[in-house]
Image 1 (cartoon, rainbow, N blue to C red):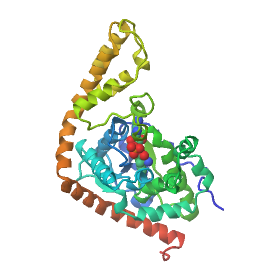
Image 2 (image 1 turned 90 degrees about the horizontal axis):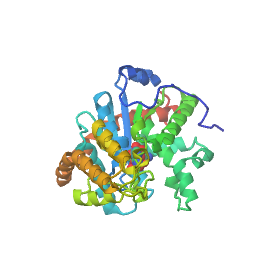
Image 3 (image 1 turned 45 degrees about the vertical axis):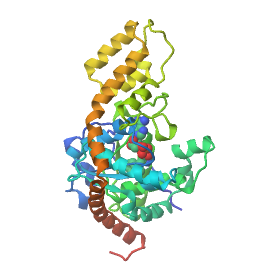
Image 4 (image 1 turned 180 degrees about the vertical axis):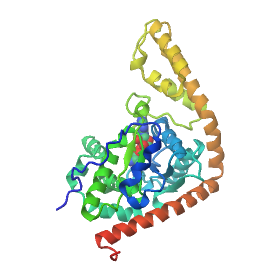
Length: 362
Ligand code: AMP
Ligand code: TRP
């Protein structure tokens, strides 16, 4: 019996990088025939709730920046969201919102393929094939499964095999780089291992070995309760929450209970951490001084946070509302994206089918 985790270690590329090094073309060498092509970046977002600023800073902004140096394949991870969301109307709404988010923050649909996971159902086929090569023990060590189990949550088969489907997403499209927040690092590492194991067994030309791209400064954005911001924790600041409600949410960010007069520590404060994601260096230094000096209440810091948030989000919010007003336009983009994605997917499946014996010998 074969274990997909063979200890095959591929490249030692520094995985924490904000911009792609010019020479990153070498990354594509996992498959020689694709060497001349551009580096492909791929990532997904679950349409399981309205996008929040953890998504924005951890993934959307870095992913949109990568369009300058890569060929972006970004998709709405509907099958993944289905492991937790079972309301058809909300589900459709969140899919549109996720797509509109990428576009509102500047993803250029001419350069990128923006698509829905379910529009290329071959991903399910690949997930099945990968799954027949993966031992349960590996999946039992996945964070999401472990924490669901620890919390006594109901775990469906989709939740358990979540990392397999995610590996299929990545491998189906010859992905070189996967821009994600830190919480997804383990999943991308698993995809690398599955790919290496599969290539080892069937031929080094089958899958490109991907690398995660994680920005250290936004690896984990805290939520209003100080835990990781997450759709499933109810602690988010929504990217497109109307300003009045957003302000109310910002006022809920937890702080310690120091009095107005007390000197405060910016480095251990959630409000300050969030402020740092949107404020300039000068603004940060200035607010940090006010923390340390005392005489400033947390209400003031929260107001400052709201203001930098609103400044950054106002324009994208307008674009977003325009887009959501014309869902047909979003649909058109998604359809075009699916066509681009499908042509790559079909080639990969051809290799996989042929190599495994599902298809004819090539
Ligand atoms: P999800 O909403 O779980 O589909 O996440 C979409 C992307 O946002 C993934 O790349 C996550 O790693 C990233 N992300 C989600 N929450 C956070 C957070 N609190 N901090 C940084 N990145 C995050
Ligand atoms: N699991 C990811 C998340 O929750 C979403 C996702 C699904 C993804 N498939 C992917 C991210 C492939 C990157 C690559 O954030």
